Amino acid sequence: MAICERVIDGLETYAWVKYLYIDDPITSLDDNNAIAVASDMAKLLRKAKGRTWPEIVVADGPSETDSHLPRMVPAPIKAVVSSHHALFFNVVCNELKKDAHKKYLLQRPERGTTYTLRATDDAPFFHHVSMLAELQRAAQGGMLYTYHFNMLRSILEKTATFFGRDDFSACIHGLNDADLFSRALNLLSHGKYDIYQPSEMVDDNKQLFRKILDAFLGRYEFVLPDIFEVPAKKKAGVATA
Image (tube, one colour):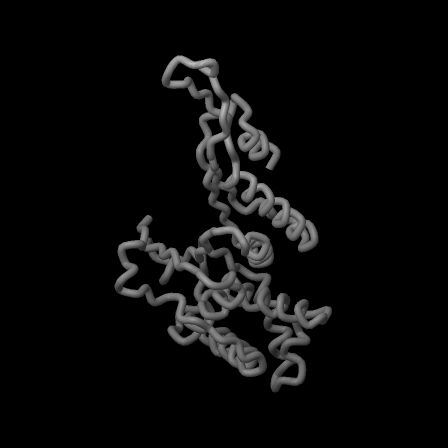
């Protein structure tokens, strides 16, 4: 952020910079610091957008003011900020709600080589809702991997925090087989869930995963959007790796 400030302030060393790309500036920060960074980032982006630059103008004809005349001209710097952190994303969007900006969700359907960029035009897109939609689709399609338990537990933890609970198990307390679900999430969310070398679940764990997911969605009625189908008119905007 200090370098970005120097760019925006017009330091000669960075005079060549026309764009900023900032990737996940809040890795390993707690929520309080993530919010603070998001707020500072929004101020920085507004400053970059509204930046002006002194330009030297020479008068066309002879006159008493025929000299080098400084004037301020618009010289905004365009910026792209990417993040997987839902809280950071939403705070930045809310801070910039009065400023023109665009919001997108980057996805890789089927974990293939095709990427989609989906606009979230009216309001910030909640990452946990997207994750739930992905988990439901994976459960229905049968392609479940061990890391999906980690994703599900993460969502339960966020839900528990939202309701002021100390533990994710509060989200499934009182459900049939709640103790089994809790033990399964504790055990299986710390296994081999590396997304770069995924291991497919065994059939018993697939069945257990579906039960936990269905029970959770039955208690909390999330509205899950269809985030995987790419509209025909927007196919031109799909990038391939």
